[in-house]
Structure formats: C-alpha cells, structure tokens
Amino acid sequence: MNMMSEAAVEKALDQKMNTAPYKMTGKDVSVYYGEKRALFDVNLNVRENTVTALIGPSGCGKSTFLRCLNRMNDTIDSCRVTGKIVLDEGDIYDPSIDVVELRARVGMVFQKPNPFPKSIYENVTYGPKIHGLARTKAEFDQIVEHSLQKAGLWNEVKDRLHESGTGLSGGQQQRLCIARAVAVSPEVILMDEPCSALDPIATAKVEELIHELRANYTIVIVTHSMQQAARVSQRTAMFHLGNLVEENDTDKMFTNPDDQRTQDYIMGRFG
Amino acid sequence: MSSTHIYSVYDEELKYLTRRISEMGGIAEQMVADSVRALVNADLALAQKVISEDAILDDAERQINEKAIVTIAKRQPMAADLREIMGSIRIAADLERVGDLGKNNAKRVIAISGSGIPRQLARGLEHLAELALMQLKDVLDVYASRSPEKANTIRERDGEIDAIYTSLFRELLTYMMEDPRNITPCTHLLFCAKNIERIGDHATNIAETIYYMATGAQILGERPKEDNTASLGAASE
Image (tube, rainbow over all chains, first blue to last red; front, side, top):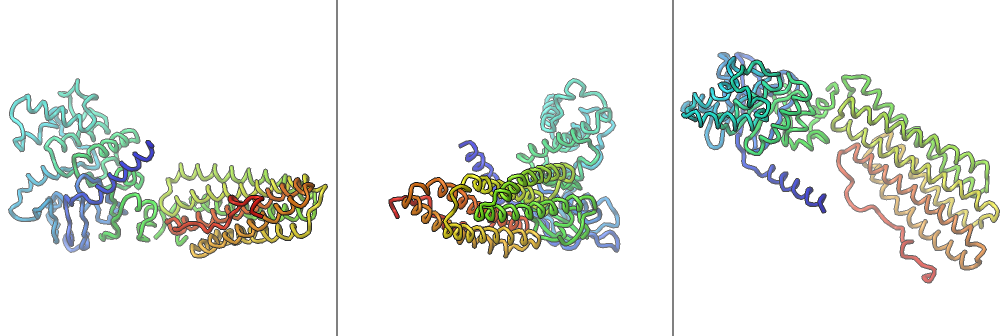
C-alpha cells in the first residue's frame, strides 16, 4: 500500500514538473566574445520550481549560457549577446531593465566560495541593505536567521554571527554564499559548479540544500559531475561546442539519452 | 559499442563481464544437452558429470556479480554502460538457474534408471529439449550481436515450447492412468519436462534483458503463453 501511494506521489510530482510554467525562456540565444562565437542559437526554457542542470565538456558554453540569465556577461567588455531571454514576461535585455534589480531576482552562487571579508551577519545583510529590503535591526535579524536556516547553516553559526565569514570551512562558506543569495528573496538561483571546491560531505549538504530550495526557487546549475546532475536535477541540458544538443528529463538523460554526443559524454567515451 | 572509454581499464572490466557471460552460456548449454542425453540413454556417468558441473556456473555467477558491483562502485556507470552491467547481473542469474534445472534433470536420471523410459516419451522429451536448446543457443548468439529485433523473435518462439510441454503433460497423464507402475518414472519425467520448459522461459528472460540493454526500452506486450497445464486434470482426458 505504502509503496503504491509513494509511487503515486512521485508521479504527481513528476507530472507537476512537466507542466510547471516556464520561469525563464531563452530564444535563439547567441553569445560572441569579440569575433569568437561561444553560443549558437540556443533555445532553452527553465521551468518554475525545477532544478535544471547544464552539462557538457569544458568550453561548451554552459557557463556562458548561465551567465546570460542574469546578465553577468555584461561585465565582460567584448561580450555581445543576441536573441531573447525572458524572465516571467519581461525581456531581461530590454534597455529599461535595471540590472541590479534583475540580479536580485536572479541570484548567483559561484564555483569558489567568495564570502565578503566581513562578519557572517553582514555577509547576509549586505544585499537586503542595498536593496532596502529591511530597516530595523529586528528585520535584519529575521532575514539573517531565515536565510541561514534556508541554507542549512544556522545551527552551525548562530553563536558566532559576528565572526568573519572567511573563517568558516569551505563548505560552510559556500552555504553562507547561498544564504547571501537567498537573503534578497530571489526567484531564480544560478549556480556555477557550486560544489567543485568542496569535499564529499560538504557537497552532500549543498546538494541536500538544492533539493530543499527547489520548493521555493527555480534553480539552474552548471556542473561537471554527472552524478551530481543526476542526483539534484529534474531536467538536464547537454551543451557541446556552443550548441544545445539535448534537453531531457534527467532520469531519461542518464539511462537512455537520445543524442549520441550526450551518450558519449556521460559514459566517458571518446566521441 | 561504437567507441571506447577514456579509461581503458573500464573497457576491460566490461569485456570481462561479456566474456564470462558467454562462458556461462556455453557451459549451461552443454549441461542441458548432456542431461537430456543422460536421461534418454540412462547414462549415469554423464548425469554425474552434469551434477558436478553446476558448481562452475554457481562460481561464475558469483564472480560476475562481484565484478559488476565493484565496477558500479568505481565507475558510476551511466546510460548504456549501466544497462550493460545491470543486464550482466540478470543474465548471469538466468544462466545459473538454467544450470540448476539441468542439474535437477540429471539427478532424476538416477531415480528413473531402474524402470526405463518408453521410447515414444523419450522422443517427446528430446524434441522439447531441442527447442529449448535452440532458444538458448540463439539467445546467446543475440547476446554477442546485441540485435534487438532478433531478441524479439526469440521471445515470440517461446509459445512453441509451451505447446509441446502441454502435449507432453497430457501424454504422461495417460501413461500414468494406463498402469500405476508408470507413476514414479512419469512423475520424474513430468518434472524433467517442466524443467526444460523453464529453461525456455529463462532464454526468454535473457532475450528481454538483451533488448533492454540494446535499446533502453522494455519489450512491449505480453509474452506468448501456450502452457495450459495449469488447467489440465486427469478428468479432462
């Protein structure tokens, strides 16, 4: 009986996953670094409350695509983006868009934990302060506790909130960065290889966190670990030489992918 | 397998599994053929040989499982590789069972050797065994070629074995009713026939596993079933 109902619950979740509305859509997205073209007309949609993993060999364009989603590429002078990327209804490359506000809605966690050289508390309140999300100390306290809870770090740091964030272990620093991203109440969280500098235990904690965050946020993660993509995501997109070659249910992708290049890549074969 | 792994040792691990499965298949085939020959000719020495060979298959299955587990732990296989390894575990189990069934037939040779088998019954049993052996041989060929179409053909042929088994079942019942002294040998023969029919089922299982390994999809549709003995009784004769 129990088995049946669990299967039914899984199925319902999966169905929801396949019908959830698109949070972000990318249409014919191309990216050039100077003369060099890094992405070729990528059409990739990201569903709400879903973890989408971007995989592919180094230099395939997956990080480039990720960075388009909150206009991080704007910081590179020679970089030019064409095509259209829509968040909810709005084109994020529209000239009227406030990029700072966009990045509050679409937060980012990087490969290497990069806490500010400030206290744990200030690391978390930095964003809300800039965006004017809180005024009183009580409000900030609440944001700090809530964000650290969400990032699964609260119990480990609650007694030393005013110690430096850089004094934490690598895994804790990365979860602090996730708390910092969560603090401004983003809608989408982008993660660029968030576990590549972490040990297996810290990686497991971050992955568990990604799993929990999915209920409230839309997550896009770039990873070089096939197992990680298989574990944390519901949808997987495979990039190769700047092209999106396959986008599929994660379960299908890792048992029976459609594209030969995906097959070769995930099985560790010479193409 | 179109290309090779970046880790060449990984290729060797997968090749090891394939090689051992083929070996198991060869031994299982020989055991079944020998057991039927021993039965028909009341050859006790041959029966004894079959019984002792079963240990080889048991060992091989254990070794294949161990290698498969270690490979999964080390390589975290994906897609076709994962299906290949899981398929090896399942096929090894099926072949080990085929060996057990051959061994069981061989044991019965000793029990029936005193009374002898009517010529006609031996024919029927031989025919059944020929078909089952052909299925086994073909499925091992398909294992080597990984052709999903051929795997499907083998699966469809299983109905024939079931039909012959059902007619043999009726025949044995008739012999038993004719003369109660036939009951002991015929009961043993009934088990032998059932064992051979089961061997056909294992060949079908293997065909389905190969289909999955090759395509990533399960074979659709019911298996052909012609084994009607579950509803047959002495009264229906």
